[in-house]
Amino acid sequence: MRGHPAGEWLRKPVRLRGIKLGETVDLIVDASRTRLLGFDVLCGDDVHRFLPFGAASLADGDVKVASTLTLLDRHERSFYQSNGVSFVENGELQGASIAEDGGVVLENS
Image 1: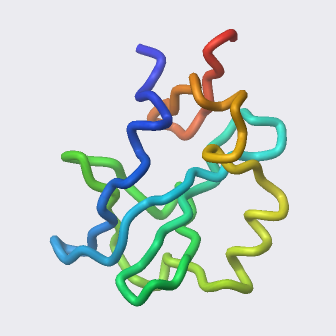
Image 2: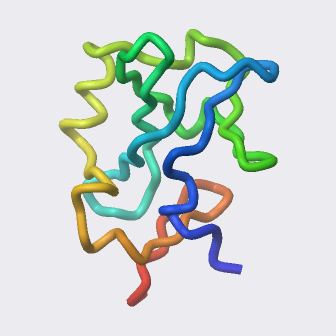
């Protein structure tokens, strides 16, 4: 299997022990478009935070975290966004799939 369609992970709840913290609004991939760096999460307080892929698990239609400390604020988030590519803004990624290890498989690969 080549993974799950990347778009499948948009608008997914982000939960900590069943409590909804927010939802994914974008996926950020590395500049070479080969790895998922993480998620742009719109939290319940209307603040965007970055959730690194390695700190998340994808299960039962939710993005699960073990701690709220894994949701990075504006300063930390800007590093990932300036060094990555937005899934939402990049048409090339629309047909991409995300493997369980975070690898990005482009539709034409």
